Image (tube, rainbow, N blue to C red):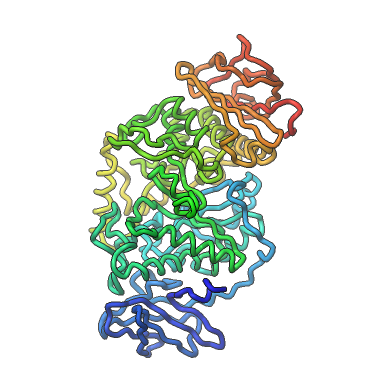
Length: 616
């Protein structure tokens, strides 16, 4: 238990028998006092700038503040609960909870089907409790991992969460600590893992008092969101400790199974052992010693294979990372968009590379960036890449928050789903995608300072210049912008919504029950396509099982000019079937070789399994 004993904990911690320890890092302060229940107590400083005290009778529910240098009073940077908002006192939390997941072993990364949600817009109530009513539907769909956009306390009651300012405090308007624990518990009872988005590259602008406590930030770098976190300058060891403790906290107190680390390209760190390497090492030690596995998944636009390479191969050791390239290749083929960063994509060849290798730009010249981008992903395993057709960024960072369902025909939605779920990577769905949700997902905030809201509004318009868009984005500060982003869950019960949802359910069953699709392995993939016809074929084989799938990225019927892999093949899924809202399949139930009359419908997608293989 060497690592567990050597941890430098921050924040409040119950010691038993009514005693509570308080620890805060404030290395530049001359005095720090704890204020609670109308009383004030001095805290003792150690050699590293940590101030601490132990109080008897510190009951859960008590509110407290820290007084710095006799005058400045602030909430705890490691507060576990801010029920009255980001400017008010912190509240003590009793973390005892009757967990019912003793036999829970988590979901291996290679088996994950991730479903990303925003708590506030996922249900009319916008709470953790309201979400539990939809877990059975997600499990029936085939989802086994629920990803929550950030739930750390942010200003007001509505936000994407990436402007949080109390990394340890669970958003009060969502249901606070008790609500999150109950949600995780209910997920685990249904064999659903929980992944939580965490933000370590910046904090939001309102209620951000970290700088009052110490040098948490640096002016050596600048992020698009404000001051950069000090991960490599003087005092950075303790800044690192703060965020490492945060990562472990979510597993220890909330039984979270995985963390998605936001925008690691905004974590600026030139040290010999970067923060992310320290974090993965600490999480690995914690997982081994606690017996509770915690996975780390990075969001990165660097296309840098070193992120997921192990430390012994000079990597950071992160378990997996997102691949934006897969999304961009698929999105441009289906929509024809070429503005902004989409200028780098748009060919079938890009899609072939995305399916076969997971990443398109591996040192190739980027027109959008006007430089070479990325490095080789040749030895990056398929289960180390998370891919998607939609997510909160790619939808919400459009000026009007429009989803793919409002940009392409119904048949194209089915093609996108097929390519995603038959890929050799870890798939992610964005809430509502499975039934073709058309409500936008807009950007929204709830700042008390109108100046901040105005700055966000102007900043958003500046971002859209690369896409040559006209008009104005919905006001991010208006409550109607938030309301318009709520999904209509009932749409999955009738009409095309039900048809698409059933199609997703079928695809996920095929993925889960077909050995060569169930275990992502891109080393067993062959893919090829034709630009002229916008057709693509991919073959995947493993463990005595072999499938191929065929996709048409054009809105016209196409004769199949690509060679079909040799063998006798039986059709598993065909998006053109009437069952899935199609006009009727043009492909036979069985094929053995290319023929002149083999055709596929507009935006058609089909999966075939080698006859005699596992039946699904």
